[in-house]
Image: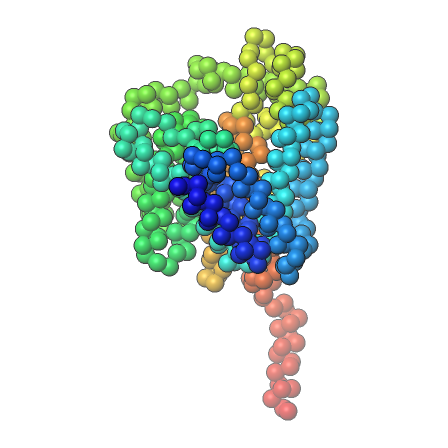
Length: 439
């Protein structure tokens, strides 16, 4: 039954996508983040829904009257350069078949990211994209929070199978990145019941992060709550949510959870922490020997390469850090491009905050920039312990940072310093006034 309902819904959206490619971007984002087909039991599980929506969206875009050119900026240039660089390293990859499959998947992600740069060109479109992301991932936060409370925190919360967020650690990262987006929507929802629903959703999402049993997720959640408190208006609501989640962790979660989180004090005391460190050493040694191109995507799958560059006696595994994974797979130039993308995205939001500070009519942009920065903090914090370097949400949020800065720069008010008349302008104005009165 779920399969039929999902198929009818998606096929029902295709005419709207053909008429408006932006609708296709929203549907693609919903399927990509929520993975509703992974919640089915029949034919819908393996049907290529993302590819179908992507193709229809591209066709609609080509024949629409929408602007076709990419708004080139530092972010878009870095994205293009990063895509080309990962393609170059794939040509010389140690595990070519696996690397090409991974690169094609990443290229599809960046293709829709560039569509985001083109189509998301207004406040309304930014707002609806944030809603789509928040609802898609917030579903797992809402469900996971209830699951954790009902089960007494005894079972792990995981994401939909065969997806980017299937692993409990990956889901924790995604939920931490979603919390600030929910906060932005809460701040700018006009209806009381929507604000209340978002408050409950944030609370349950925080509890769901605890239920994932992810140590990296716990660290990211603590950092996100702290940065949310610093960057958000109405801090009392954030403080209450933080107190409730912290109280849940302290009084409600079982001893197994407390024992697992206690290993954060010394990562080398646990097998998973030790193997993570071994993967970091592998990536660093590989980059030092191949500083320009690295080993290519999924290089850890090569047993011979692992034996050559990893610590003796270690077992090959994925490189559990967005930074070390990029370093090992893309070399030092790839890592520089990746770090530049994060820096430029943060800077774009800082520029928006500076330009819109103290302007009531642009408060939405100020808050959105602030919450995007918190999402980036979540990605950079939890990602330090996870192999999520090519997570699609991170790159779409980078694009959103870029289009927000462009929108404010082109359509928003100029900074106060730019609006103040210079001394010469004041003198000319005072000279012109008597002439006008004499006419």
